[in-house]
Length: 514
Image (cartoon, rainbow, N blue to C red; front, side, top):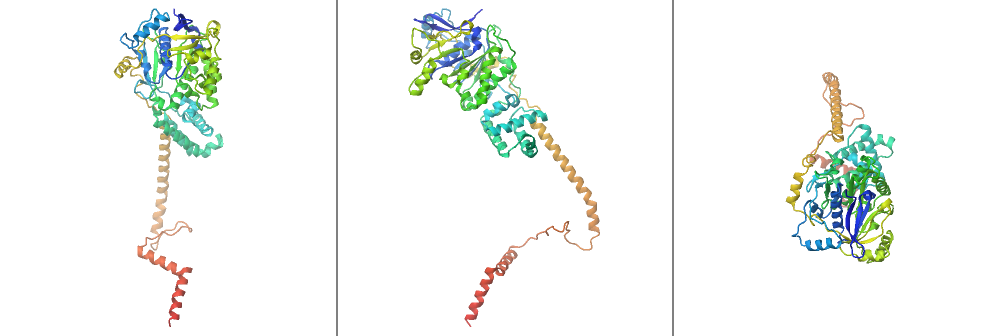
């Protein structure tokens, strides 16, 4: 049985095989490096290695290149010669081209099977992060979730939450006595943020059928782990939605999976690409949540690998949890860059053969500075490693090939049709309709009670005139013609102070002329 993933060759002439131990793969990892240094290919070969070892993988495809995992590489490719040469240098004697089992997912349902969750499962903390709410607005959202539980109002999609917020606004006075100030301004701000989320396509994230975690942890008939690829090229236009969804998925794995201790190999490996999006402007409560998940989820058999340009993008407390590291080249153009490069180099066990800081700056494309956990979880000595070539296709597959993979998938048809069962929106609409019907009925009954008395009153009248219900009631206004209105206005002016002055002036002039 395979116990180690072959990554590449290290040592003086790149002939020493470098690998990632499956037994320590759930101790998390980091893939870092500047743009164009080979991070995507490293991610691709790690996904291949885990799949071949029977470990399911979840990763996001930012540029569309990783769809090539579903198709075998070919000798016709322009890089076939360099690939074979590299395989010979690093001792990859059994290198062959191969395709891997892939399931495509897409929040928008265009390039993969739809993937959804419910508003309740997302929870107020992550939803507040997604909507970029203030502390006061987050408080209102917490009230909404509490009321949903107490009132038996399932929050499944966005219209459920929107209707509940309307109900909270209508009952704000009573709710404020129990939960504190419920501001109409805060409710309005949340509704506006929900509207922005709708415009970004967020309505497709929330609803049913919700994603079952077991569908991410499958193997094929040959025992190879399923590679789950989330189409993220369009999703990256809404980075908050992207980061929040992946964090929700990670949190669900943490909450739902049982404890397994230290297994021989992970139950699932989770790659978090563009990891800086998770931490940019994130509140401390959210960063603490990520740290907790990273620290404890390894006992659930899940390995988490952050992919970013610079290790400094990851908070220090979380960076300390990442035992397996593949560092591609970093560029040092500014004083800040040089400082971050030096700090990155200081996190590795030194190798007497070379200076780590210089190596990180000098490694070429497809080469990296690596350090993997060894026996008893001790970090390995840093090595300059030539990354092995991928067995699957380098670059994306065609749209037709993607559609064929989706049609043949076990997930085909399972999540395609949206369910809209009775939830908060329908329940509150039913309550409102019932209250309106009861009010209308009461009004009709009151009107029917007053009709006999009104007939008796009309029958006993001796003259026709306007009926006055109260002594303070104003008489009904009569419609005036335009001429009448103008006449009244002129008379009013003449009887006023200005009018009297005008009359005195006219009379004075007449008398002077006599």
